[in-house]
Image: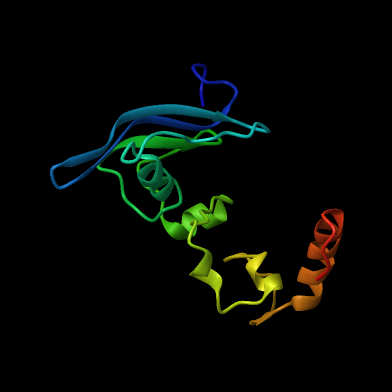
Length: 137
């Protein structure tokens, strides 16, 4: 991030997005540091969802730059976001209604063996996490 933001992993500068006559984001500046949990909070219409959609590649900003690990991106695609380890989980509970518990634990990050989902490996990873909260696969 250069000398201005030496600790930030994600640095956002002048990020803006307009939907017709509605200014969803207006020149957002934000730094997110490594190993710290961050919360994006605000009133309805404050731009939280728009920012997250831009960061995860679902929406293209009108202007601004996102810098991740010292590389600047004027736009992030879904494929790039996935490669960078950035994803978004929406609140709608029925989003993965057709999936079982195990595959719901790996949304869009299923472990593959060739073209097939490697359920055994996913179970190996999920089991200790679920057991730590009193659940089983």
